[in-house]
Length: 157
Image (cartoon, rainbow, N blue to C red; front, side, top):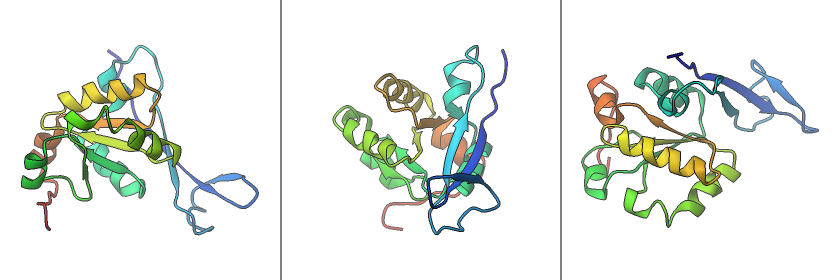
């Protein structure tokens, strides 16, 4: 199986609608837009839409507008979650489709997080099938994130 690499290209919008590549990011006072490129249709869903913890750390660093969506239950979210994550439990995703489309319309990239990555993978596919294309997930979920020693927050922190 061919390993798909995610390539992040940062673009800054300048007056007149033109786009320039870094290092001119931030010169207009606007946030950078990050676009991910996934070559090869032979890649599986896991490799096209899933990021490792290491890749996720880099995405969080680069994409200041990234929306991290924890799809676990409110109780699990309260126990621990990725810093800055919002909670949209799986039993509300269908009703919250408008929210995801709104983030897409704002050109914000979304990253789904579940306990082990499997639910996030399923819902990433579901959202893509409904036209929300700027959504990915963390392979291995919050378990992999914690095992890698990455920071976690508790509700109220």
